[in-house]
Amino acid sequence: MIEYISIGMNSCGIAAGAKDTYQALVKGLKERSLDIPIKVVGCAGMCYREPLVDVVEGSGITGYGGVTADNVERIIEEHIVKGSQVQDLMVKKASRSDPDDIRWDMDMFFKKQKKIVLENSGIIDPEQISEYMDRGGYHGLRKALSMAPPEVVSEVDRSGLRGRGGAGFPTGLKWKITMEAKANKKYVICNADEGDPGAFMDRNVLEGDPHRVIEGMTIGAYAVGSDEGYIYCRAEYPLAIKRLSIAIDQAKEKGFLGKNILGSDFSFDIHIKEGAGAFVCGEETALMNSIEGKRGMPRPRPPYPSEKGLFGASTMINNVETWANVPWIMRKGADRYAEFGVDRSKGTKVFALAGKVRRGGNVEVPMGMPIREILYDIAGGSSTDRDIKAVQFGGPSGGCLPSTLFDTPVTYEDLTKTGAIVGSGGMVVMDEGTCMVDIARFFLDFTVKESCGKCTFCRLGTRRMWEILDRISEGKGREEDVSALESLAYDVKAGSLCGLGQTAPNPVLTTLRYFKDEFMSHVNDKECPAHVCKPLMRFNITDRCVGCTACARVCPVKAISGEVKLMHVIDQEACIKCGSCVQACKFKAIEITGIKEVA
Image (cartoon, rainbow, N blue to C red; front, side, top):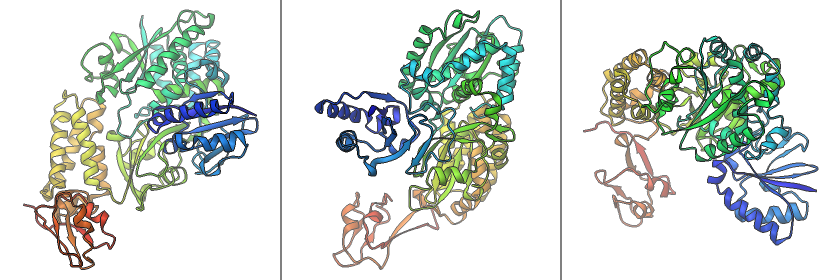
């Protein structure tokens, strides 16, 4: 007997057409007079197969992917009416008693994952507190309130949890410092200002399991002696803000927030502050300035936030994923959490897989898993016909690692040795068709625009670095530019006040370290090996041309001429290097080469 049908309605699902799928389900069930509830849930992480629909019945859970409004009819007719699963749409089959126990996974997407932060995502309705509670929600808070605050801090410390926002600072130590701070007023803050290109881990959690973050913050507030907290969430996440607001109201109604929580002497409330989209506000002191109504610019440290933070009071800041780990640790115990991961990198890490990868989405794996396993065993490798060339960890603050380092374990220490960082968890995958000079320029362009301008090194140094990269990509670079770029990068790292400027050179330094030959090809040979930088590209028609005229017909600027059945030619002055001719030619008669001179 079918209990209900669920559909993933996070932003990724909605963007893929989940609202139309939902309406088609409602209509199809109504036409057949089938009284089966339809439940809205978050994203299970398989963003690449959205819209996702689960049919939940006594025998188990059958997950379907790519369920558009057009193929809803098949699921209703074949599975719900006739009881036969639609094999070509199936993506998973899970246990009814334990939805996390996925015994059949078409893409092997879930096989090596371990769900802690994402244990409820794609399973519960994020707007129903009862569903969160049925899955153990707020049990961690009840347990924490039965303990003395130092015991709670000790439990988090023993778990080995480190900050998941990028720096990897030990969470228990941060809590201990704040707990011991002598202050009449203390704040706790959730940093939900997720701004890295290619990162969407926090959005997924906030949209799919908002109570998890609220419970984590409340436990942290009790531990350090705070009665007021803020969730600083970027305004570009309207669905996350909506669901957080609903969750806060529900938590208050149930006595998990507000005065005398669960009959104790502990009181705590949470406010939502919408960020205006400044990347620098992901830095904790700039974030606090923003909450206070000031311009988002970093403050000198010391004093650190635990001493003097928001509104001059002692403040503790953790990011979304860090807070989301806390309820599980309190519910299951520090020792259980520490069983996952390796050495000083305990627990799991959520990564957002984006770029040239077959299975893009959110994955959660034990710390210490090699990069190769994540990219190939879970993510399925490249989405193109080309091999994976590199992966960018940690967005603009991270670094590009080549395929030769894919056996590196994902730990804070191991990735730092490579010049990259774990960061917040964004992983942008690049194939052999990616130009690493162009990638370095892309990330640096982002940080140039997002710099608050306070530091000279960050404000001017990143701009000069971008200008050098731009010159190289246009074929106007000189050999001394490469050494100047590296020297300037180290100066910017050393001379910047906050994490934005201190890490902005990382993509440049890692591409120089691992892909210097590409830089030298641009400089010395005036050639972009990946054929990406247009000023260094030349399209030539070879003698394989049969004069079919296909290239001439698709050229948007009429730069190709020639008679039928005769070899064509390209007017190099008129050519805009759009590549339409290459795609149109069935005889592979058009070659892309570098140039030896650029005016």
